[in-house]
Image 1 (tube, helix red, strand yellow):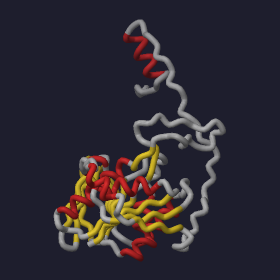
Image 2 (cartoon, one colour; image 1 turned 90 degrees about the vertical axis):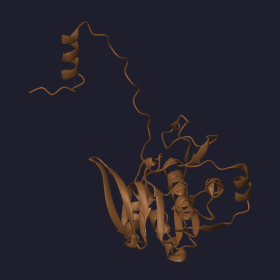
Image 3 (cartoon, one colour; image 1 turned 45 degrees about the vertical axis):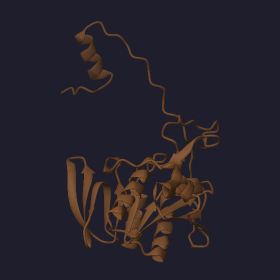
Image 4 (cartoon, one colour; image 1 turned 135 degrees about the horizontal axis):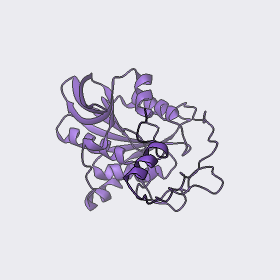
Amino acid sequence: MKILVTVKRVIDYNVQVRVKADNSGVEKENVKMSMNPPDENAVEEALRIKEAGKADEIIILSVGEEKCQETIRTALAMGADRGIMIKANDDIEPLSVSKIVAKIVEIEQPGLILMGKQAIDDDSNQTAQMTSALLSWPQATFASKIEIEENTAIVTREIDEGLERIKVKMPFIASCDLRLNEPRYASLPNIMKAKKKPIDIKSAEELGIDVKPRIENIKISEPPTRQKGVMVADVAELVQKLKYEAKVIWVS
């Protein structure tokens, strides 16, 4: 069985994001970039499934600019077998990504697709669901545990009420939660080996996918500055402020 894992290059989660002066987006020049954290969990889970003898090959797919190769190399250094990079605009929309993934699935015929539950840059949480719809495959979102059986899988999902266990038929798509596992660090020998692993580079046009944006970004602005707290004289004043200013206490 082949496992297809999608990864995205995003601004590192430790970096303070800055909005451009013209409010057209966020600054990415000279900013540290890394793999989207939930995608690391997806790569790690694929590696564990392969190590358990339930998969033969792990393919890493990334869509974006040329620099996405660095993110693919990171996944290859963790232990994946080969990569596919689809050249496209860095601001490509989730629907276009889903169409690209569906096309690659048509070519590679994987038995399982693993994705991060969402990207930390846009928080869309859409690609897995739309890819599932395009392929007519079962999906298991927010997966915190995946148990592969012969023709099915048992997936534990994080939901508001707690944990939900579902059974899905293979092949299926899982979007991985941060609680799924603890991603491994790439060792130096594996980093060196990753440089020799193949990455197939194609363009979205070669796949016949139209990636023109359908949504216009009007403005991006920083969140409002947090207001300074105030001192209260007594409990009665505190209750009044919680009721009528903060409105966190319900008034009948």
